[in-house]
Length: 358
Image (cartoon, rainbow, N blue to C red; front, side, top):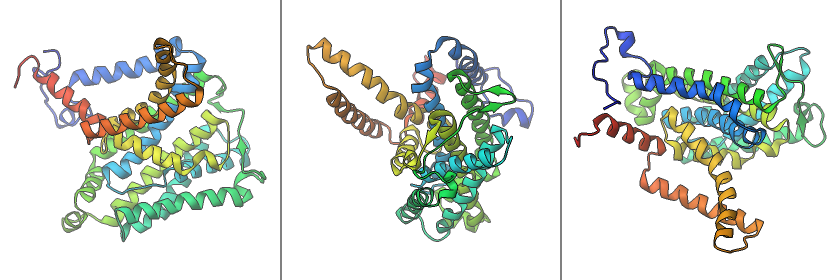
């Protein structure tokens, strides 16, 4: 009875078109954001920040960008790791080569470079789709690996391709502690998630979804496929590029091209599929599943072995973790092919009817 719209009357179009039309949803989101900003920093340890919260926030941001392209526009991409790498290395070059450049403009410029790179490799989407497009975007991954390994200018003439950053500041505040890094990532994620949510609800978001459902019919009713597809590549690559810059600057500190390998591209795609394609909330669910579950299994399996008197080696734990992790992915996809976000939506619908059966 507590999750109902009864009595929540809308008296204007603006009120009817809110992101969260139900008051309970608005308050729940505000409470979660407030807890993330104020409660988590007070109760969490440095290990929790470094191992769980910071990678979760950055991966959620990257999955959000991939979901715009794959989930909302229906363009399959296997080059997300390359877009992250371009964002990281571009932000690094702006940060190092322009004296006194603040961190936030460097991240934005890195995202813009990644956006241009995404548009370049999104041009094949105008002629091909499906698996052919996936192969075309996979070429971006191999090209970026070659570019950052062979062209030394991108790595500031580093012979190994490894680069590092230090002395990060935002508005005069040092970004050196795990708490400050967490708050920076959380602030950027909240801003970009809000912008992405409004974008997919607007005219351009409806164009993306029309292209996803049937591009020929979308062209017949006046939607320009070239503009819709390339804009999806641009927005997606920008968000993924900012996430890549955060991954290098905040989480790794020092990185090389192998940090943005094709494995990362597949991992981001799995986040979108498991969390739910075409859902902003699904990006968070998928990132949580991929980032947190392996850590939880790594902590739980030794306890289970000691409980049954079984001595499990470190290699055995890692192999069992991969097996269980893969089996859970398959199980979730069988139970709900539309991802965890669909399960969440079904639960909310049941709450709106509870305690009545229909």
